Figure 1 (cartoon, rainbow, N blue to C red):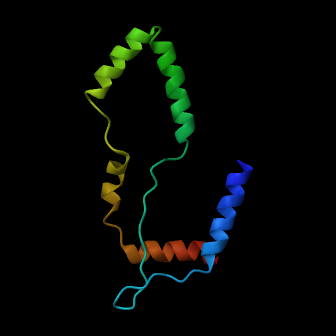
Figure 2: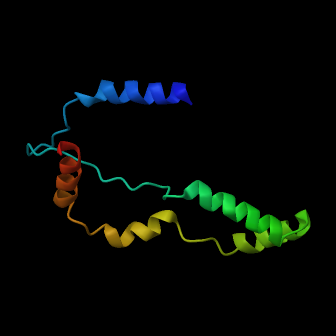
Length: 102
């Protein structure tokens, strides 16, 4: 884990002085990215594991439940972000830059 942390720090330091991408019209380019994981993601998974273990006492019942659930998959994680896509990109950039300049 420590090696990953050191590698991440080196990678960040290497790219920190890198120039921003510029479009043909001369404006700087930014990309909006949405995280795939939410806060408490691991905790939620662990709680679900314990809940399922208590709910399904045998492998066969757990397997049947899984097959039934796979017929009705949950919505994609990005579906919750669809309503936020209409955000003003300039406002998001300003908030991001303000966070690091204070």
